[in-house]
Image (cartoon, rainbow, N blue to C red; front, side):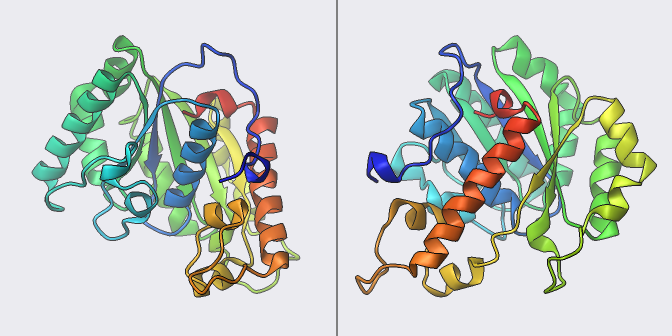
Length: 264
């Protein structure tokens, strides 16, 4: 990847704290991609990050950051609860030993995350070991998406950490982009309760050309870098322009909420 093609992350202090960014929410598209973006920015800034992909159904992160590539870790042996717990505990120990930040994607396996967090006082454990926790909740615009996220948040399983709620516009099912898919949520008193408790609300914009990139078997990072397709041709320049703009828009949304320092 050329330096020219890399997006420039917001400058952060040289003493940028190690972070454990934990994805929370249903196993639907967007959460893994966002963790990949956070990792992409951290690596571009020269920071050490491990990528822990425990999603049994969608190995998006492990494809982007394989275990033999220096930043990925081995996936769980299976999707059983106890095996996932052991994998999670060992993965956190690996990040501590490596003096690295870590992003963790359990996909739809919030039950594993919830149980481990509740049993171990996870936030306090991470802080005691010099890692600041960031709990990243992801919701689509469907009401049951937010019901699921709010239940987990309200259970206080994840505590003693910074918290972000990402509104994933990419899950909006209507072809029309003229309406705000989260207008109803902005009026929901549960969202107000989260905001009053310190949760930062960030819009994760939709990349409307994503289906064309997927058709070309390209990920957004390859597109931004100007990597050619498998047949040697370039991605449509409009799709590349839209992808770069989308990535910048997401960064601006994070900056406006003051949470760039909460990322790895």
